[in-house]
Amino acid sequence: MVEKRLPLPIEEAVRRVLQEMDVPVRTESVPFLDATQRFLAADLVADHDVPPFDRSPYDGYALRSFDTAQASRTNPVRLKTVGEIGAGTVFAGDVKAGETVRIMTGAKIPNGCDAVAMLEVVKEESDGYITVVRPFAANTNISFQGEDTRKGTPLVKKGSYVHPGVAALLATFGYNYVPVAVQPTVGILSMGSELLEVGAPLTPGKIRNSNAYMIAAQVRQAGGQPVMYGQLPDDLKLCEQAVRNMLEEVDIVITTGGASVGDYDLVPQLIETLGAKQIFNKVAMRPGSVTTAAHVGGKPFFGLSGNPGACFVGCELFVRPLIRRSLQAQNIHLKKSKAILAVDFPKPNPFTRLVRGILSEEDGIHKVAPSGLDKSGSVISLAEADVLIMLPGGTRGYQSGMEVDILLLGEQQGSEWPWKSVAVSSKS
Ligand SMILES: Nc1nc2c(c(=O)[nH]1)N[C@H]1C(S)=C(S)[C@@H](COP(=O)(O)OP(=O)(O)OC[C@H]3O[C@@H](n4cnc5c(N)ncnc54)[C@H](O)[C@@H]3O)O[C@H]1N2
Ligand code: MOO
Image (cartoon, rainbow, N blue to C red):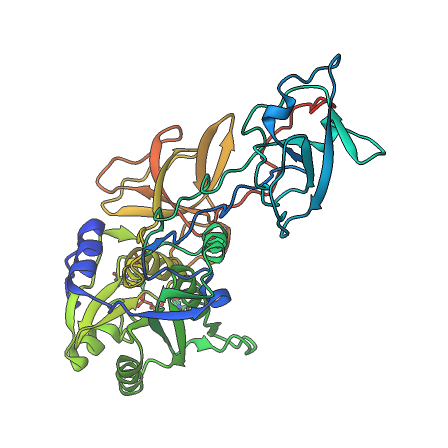
């Protein structure tokens, strides 16, 4: 007689994972380029102003506003050019009344000057003077010291993802080495006598082990470090030994396959022989209902389904937050949004469905539709999916036009330039 499993609601299962499992938070300091796409391990505060000095935002002439106060077409004012500076060089000395300095974008405003006239609005004479025909008020065209960031301003918080914008900030403040969270190691073992190595030719009854590589990519995307333990036939002794090794070597153990109730499904036996504390072995969701979570001597163990769709969902919902939390990430779960269903799901389902979907926009309305065959064993629908459409169980089905929750997967990008340009006048 097959054991009867008690399905847990998804949120309860996620809550238990986070409550009963832990991956230690560790930090390290790494060279700058190794820190991108990692998570910061410290709150960073500005230790100087940005810009660090008043500077010119344009190529032009730095001048004293007072000198130009009376300038007009009928009363042109001549200023003597006493120097030329590009970004990175500093004008030595003070600029006096009636003088100007030719200055390039990014150069420090010379002492005595309080405005910049753009090259386009001055007349450069052949005798070393310029002529201006309008006043320049004090502070015109100056980027002020600290206008971007003041010394002491909090910059980025611990747990921030080091995306290109954060990288720019870190470099601005001289972080040659960056404090980041250590990426937890996640061991991945595939169990199943039908599994072939990725490079092997197909033979009757066999399929290639795709889950291991899918999970590895998911682990990387979450911020963890996958450790591949290959694949084993459905043999309890072999699998038990492999899992014992994993428990010694990695922070999180994942097996895929054998999570259900079949004759060769080893996860329930593994839990028993390893003396693991089971947290759940059934979740009220589809796919992924057979997801098992346990811990062995404090180490998280996930028995993900062998079906690729179910395996994917189990990893996103339960493993991802655990990895992200160990990175002290600010967002540990998939981001939720809303969209309008573009198709019917008429069948009532007691379990919450997580349908692999494609998000699109029509006339400003976000719509979702399944990305392909919505079966737990389908692979193509995973490749196309950019969202999981959440259809809570216990309803009489869903109709096209209904608003539903969606979970955004990975990085969302567009294929076409998303805005229409407006005509630009030649004056600007
Ligand atoms: N009598 C019952 N049968 C099943 C139940 C049930 O409750 N009662 N649950 C079904 C559900 S739901 C799912 S999901 C699957 C889960 O099965 P397992 O987790 O035990 O996975 P396997 O049986 O080992 O494999 C399922 C399927 O996936 C293929 N597979 C396995 N590993 C991989 C891999 N690494 N890469 C690609 N594909 C893989 C495998 O060949 C099977 O086709 O059980 C249902 N049955
Ligand atoms: O775990 Mo199974 O995919 O629920 O369908």
